[in-house]
Length: 402
Image 1 (cartoon, rainbow, N blue to C red):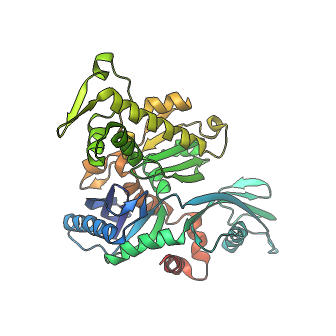
Image 2 (image 1 turned 30 degrees about the vertical axis):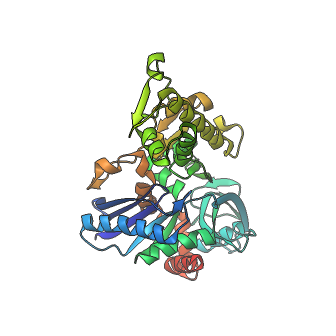
Image 3 (image 1 turned 135 degrees about the vertical axis):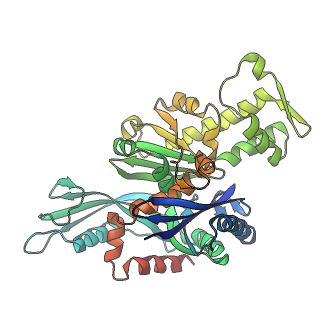
């Protein structure tokens, strides 16, 4: 049986809505894609509700026209500097006489891991079990096994209530219900990382317009997440200030001429022009290179361990719109001495494959892929064991955000 599925990625530069269907035989099929310029969003946070709402409305309308039906609900990406994460452990004793681990024990041990003090203005966005230990031995799923002591390490991600509240207000205002909130670097990781990379240890850096979203995957699970409030718009502002251009013209020149690859002397000395303005190609590229180099170093500093070569032997995967800058792979390799590649979303069945097959849409595609994969994961099963049930849990969470 086919069921409808949709995602909305509200970014600093664009809003992307994807509508499709999902069934057990043919999988995911894309029916509509709507992309609109983003206004009223700064560093992935709502700065103007009216403008942001209109940008979302335009994106949804375009997707609906292509798909041929009205969008009722969607999965929503969340990011911004208000996001924080931590790994926390919990331990319980298995008390039943048969020493058999039951689903209720998973709930109990996660409740212990969640016994952390969070400020009143913050709420949990994701609780993802990283690893279970039963009597000192690591197991994938302890349910049905015998043991005396169960341990869990969980990755806990929290968000500022006010920031998510503003985003959900804009989504609801255009008549869209929220199926779930998904941290964007988790979505991007699902779209562009291989299972081998996740197992070995890899960092994904999604460099968008307003933020650089970071996720570290290790042993097949999430290890670390963070969000840096520096990205493509900072590069454009540097160009505008350094070369005396408007922001719009600086953005146009960055996209058309920007490069991080050292040019030949004759090439570097040329003068480039756009809309009656002329600037030095060398100056443009040097400004871009200086800012991108700073961003890469900030990404490395975000890693929770200094021996990052051991933490992420599979290297770094760059995605997001800024990863399209020529030479960014070579520059990142020279700074980190690690393997580096560009992450491109997989080809999906349906319309607009050519459009979505670009690093700029890693999050948009990943929102759907992440939900497909995690619908029946351990973290979802734990949520289902709560008294409110999965729908009730997310409904209550979204009510808090509203």
